[in-house]
Structures are given as structure tokens and as C-alpha cells.
Figure 1 (cartoon, one colour):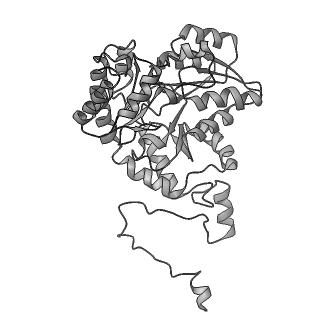
Figure 2: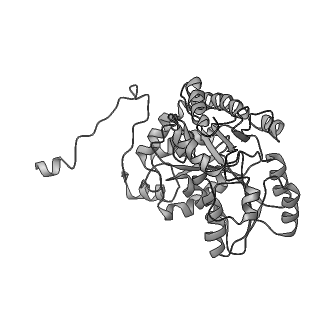
Amino acid sequence: MKDETRVNHPPAIELPDDNYPLNLPIFQNVKWETETVLEGERIARGERPGFFYSRLSNPSVRQLELMLAQLQRRDECMVTASGVNAVAQTLIGLTRAGDHVVFFTEGYGPTRQIIRGMLARFGVTHSMLSIDDLAGLERTLSTRKTRLVWFESPTNPINKIADIEAITRLARAHGALTAIDNTAAGFHQHGEFDIDLFVHSLTKFATGAGDVMGGAVIARRELIDQLRSDFRLFGAHLDALSASIMVRGLKTYFVRYRQQSASAQTVAEFLEHHPACTRVRYPGLASQPKAELARRQMREFGSVICFDLVAGYEAGRKFTESLQLFARTPSFGSTESLAMPPQMMQPKDFSPEDLALSSIGPGTVRLSIGLEDIEDLKADLTQALETIHP
């Protein structure tokens, strides 16, 4: 055999049955071979376990999917290249021309843009309500045959709490599916509710490092199978390396999420008593309008805090630029603390009426609390607030 052939057909490495790695190796591989053509065909048709092509499935990716499904207490999971792709795949995969979708003003901007823009072009109609308007939801479901009710809890970025039991009960009574963007609540909460689909941005809490992007849809097997048949044609698969990094990151997920929640609670209480701040919104605060509901639905309340600066829009710029331990950037869930000023918070597609319903004001700031020492964070916030409220 010539050297040119040898380097393309290296010797196989076989591990003894009693000698195995503690961590699943990274299957940085695109294609898979079988002993016979027939077995390859069976794998491709889904008639037996196995792998065929990594756009369809990969062991590293599959391990991540199984871990997430277990955490969310559901049968099955499909991971994607980004959180917004998980949103888009779910909405496109579940709706057809003539369907109707209900969603809420208080929520993630790209989700709203997909529903109002992309789905509308495909002939899917929608109703946008406030997450607090359960009477409006019941009226809409009673008068419009609805395919899907999409919501968040806590909502991004304002941290409103949805009444999950009420929303799912109303949707079920009228034959509509429910999907929750559960990113802020994490992978371990809300699984006890009668929710059909959970959508996550893995970019946030999966690793905590903000170094890889990904998304996930978690649901009963029937729904995931329906979505996966379309998903395979879009090519927005997660790569094996990113999946392996997330599997590793999930090992510290509970330690990170609980510590960040505890620190966020302390920071929220601190901000609530500062004269420069108003309308501090964090689900764990006893002063919140739905504090009791939040305690019933959640065990920890996440890393995100939202509040308004009394001095308004330009004060938000000065405040965030004065912070030394908070990075001025989008996203949340990272081990480092983040801050978004009002200039990055204002929805560009809202009418004045929509903006009022959204609860986003001219001085609204969002913080994501990381794993820094809590006294250091409070000191940094204090000095930054003093620049606008001496």
C-alpha cells in the first residue's frame, strides 16, 4: 500500500470493552459507514439506531439532546444552531397558511418579528396581547381557531411572570398547542406544567461562558419528530464541538444558575432601595405584582434584573458606561455580569401603544448578574449610580 493511500486509511483504534472514557469523545465527523448498504439504508430510514450524516444526527449532538430532554422532563429534544433558529423552526414547522398564532407584547423581539413578518407572508395570522390579559386570551381563543399560543416566563426583558397554568388550560380547552420560551427560567423549571413545547437559547445558560451558540426545542416525541423532518432540510444543525462544549458546561449548570439567582436577588433588593432607580423587576422580590405566582412556579428566579432610571434615557448611557464590572452587551446567563442600556432596549417595531404595553420605558436598563463577588458588584453599581444621582 502506498503512503498516499495509508494516510487516508489510518489504522483503527479499538478500545477494550472494560476500558472506556469518562466523557463522550467529540465526534468531529460528518459521515458514517456501515458494513452493508442495506444497514445504511435502514439507518437513513430511521428503522434502526445508528448514524448516517451529521447534518441529520451525531453522537455528540445526541448526548446533548438527551440531557436537555431529561432536565425539562420531556421525551425528546432537537438542538439547533442558535436560539432564534429554534424559535423559527418551531413556528415554521407547526403552522400552515390559514393558521392563527397568539403571542404577547412582553417578549423576545426576533420571535415577534418572525410571527409578524415571516409567518404573515406565509398566510399565518396572529393576535398580540399583554401577558397579563387572560380575559383577552380567552376571548381570542373563543373567536379565532388558534394553532399555537407562544409565551415566555419570565418575559424578556421585563421579567413579567405568566400564569402558566391558566394559559395552558385555556389553550388546551380550545385545541391550541402551547410553546414557552423558557430560556430565562432555565432547563429545570416549569416541566410540571402542561406545556407542549419548550424552546431555549442554549447560548445563555448551557455553558455560562458565552463561547458557543445554540438552541433547543424540547417536547413529546410526536412533536419533535414532526419538527425534525423539516429541520433536516434547513441545515441549521449544531456542530459536534459546540454540542460537546455544552455537555461539559451543563455539569456546572445548577451551581451557576443557583448562585447567579442568589446574587441577582441581592442586587435587586439593593436597587429597589436606591433613589436613582424605580420599577425594579425581579421575580424573587416580594414587592412584585405576581410575587406569589412566581414563588409557586419557580424555585430559583434567574440572573436577569430589569429596572428604570429615574433620570431617564441619557442617564442610562452614562450609568452603563460608568460600570466597570459589567460588560455592555446583549445576552444573559454568562458568568460575567452584563448590562444593556436604554439605547439597546428600545423595540424598533413597536407603535406607541405597543411600547406602553411592553413596559419598556426610556430609562429601562437590563442587568444579567454573573458569578463575581456580590460586594464587588454592589460597589460597582453604587459608583455608577452616583454619576447620575450624586
